[in-house]
Image (cartoon, rainbow, N blue to C red; front, side, top):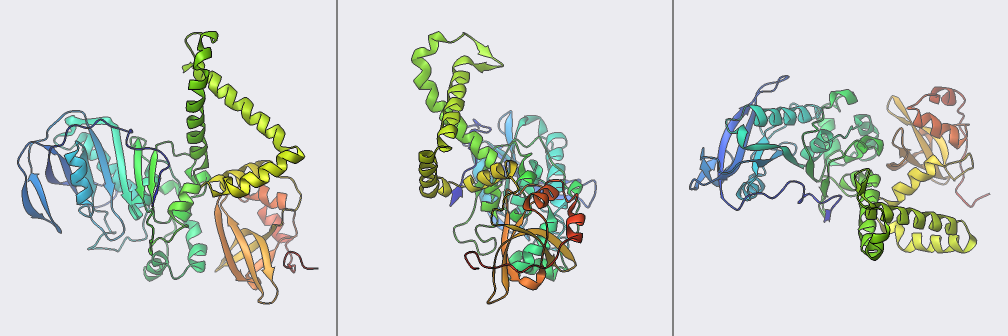
Length: 447
């Protein structure tokens, strides 16, 4: 199933007419590691021939002349244990359509060598080095359009792509996640490798030259909080598998999708304005001519009308009939829209009061660490607790775990105080923890 966050087709392109594919192997310097092997597919007028190239047989014009000018560039990042050749069929299709496609083999995370499997911070650096090479050192770099660079990333390559376009993962979320999902492929592999590497957020590099991305089944998707994805401005097309046993739904691609609520809201607003503009066209002669702040007057009028409509709906929603309608609408329609509940939780977080909302702050123990969470309920019969573990500093996304009550220390603190500590990246949490005392929790509805 495809989850489209934004259209990527219009991103770059008007590529050239279909041509044969040229191919060449290259070596990319890595300033902080050994040279990277890579392959480049590109449009070519030279005749192609079927030949064995590495692991696969391809029909290409090896070292053929490049056809075209101002060509868009796509860089490709493979999944764990793969190689630059792993998506050669996609690369061929793109090259036939007029793209230059460059893929590399990630050092330490490929089919020959998995010694760096957990060193995911190296992957974005590798890709940045590939873009540097293609724009400056590839012998045909002059045929490239540096303003049209896109990315395709699969699995660990999808994670890599999210980082490159601005995402900042929190790998500290990996140990508690794997403690609750030890059966998952990634968690088993990390355990076999001796545990996850400790990586500071500053170790991840970004590349603003990449202006659009296709992210397929991103690995470690749960490592991105809503705030961690907030810096992403490039349009994304996000994919997941219907029956992915390696990266099971909904903790990977869906988690990323839900972490981009503002993108979904902006997209919806754009569509609504597009519907309002034709309605206002008959009255366009009443509007001031020209543009205001670079925006056409009729578009500003549509935006104003949309804002007034939303204000009116807000006022109506506060009335008794409005609350009934809103509740029914949310239950039947809105709750089924991806990202809606996340947007709602963020808005509620900004406007929250000290009143009890059925959540109780607590410290949850994982190995030698404690994580701030919110207890949802406890089953006294089995002595197990359901806990929501939010992202920090935003509670817009997180995970829900069930664990023994002995690993949960209730905090004798108001809900709002715990939220403030989370928003301030832990400031004040030690004070709250010092006053935390174990407290029994009953199932909702019991005396």
